[in-house]
Image 1: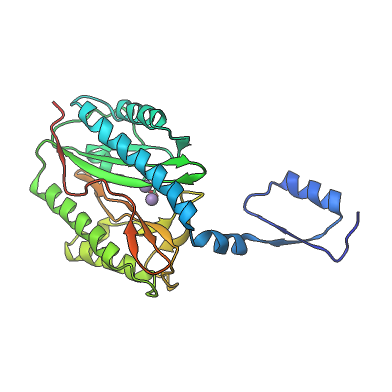
Image 2: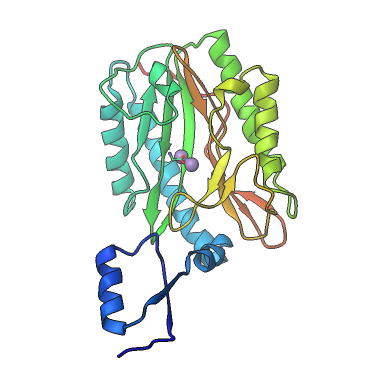
Length: 275
Ligand code: GLY
Ligand code: MN
Ligand code: MN
């Protein structure tokens, strides 16, 4: 049926050219508009039901991390630890991982977008986990960094700066304030510790049906912190040759402005003995 004046709203970022052509042929419509903005707005504020699903995903993620720590031994490779972690996630009821699980050791932890490989864990390493899972279509996203045995004074300074940045950024989450304040709070701590050049990414991102969605927690975002927002706070310092630390939490702003940190895995530096 030809509908000359009709407008068809589509998700241009998701529809394939083949689907678009078939739709055009079937409907006779030539006027296609993007519905993306409306969908982003609908997904921005999470309901209690959505948050319950995210909490389930977080609970599996944190329980898996708890379970695998005792299995970590000197000489294990990043890939071996990753395999063990993903098996545990599956056993605990995860439907699938939310993104490629990151298990990075030693100097590899200094790569913010590194991939696990055959590097074997050694004393003096940082061990960074960044991972999440989907449960009932909603995801989790958490990062924790551990020390393997004794670490250097500089590694300790880096850890302490990232932890403080994470905490200050969480304190900066206040209903009605601009989102950029959150990034600013984290970045100021890291700059004051003289590591500003090593914090090379935004402070966080929204999550929900996808692991990266609105809002973006960066220093130029003047949009207001609204009730219903769910986002990560994940400052990091990445120093070549030394390693890196990132500490990532998932934070929910309730409609009344109460700020709830949904992730609860301890953040104080934990030393894994790994014998
Ligand atoms: N590795 C995905 C993220 O933390 O954003
Ligand atoms: Mn992450
Ligand atoms: Mn993240």
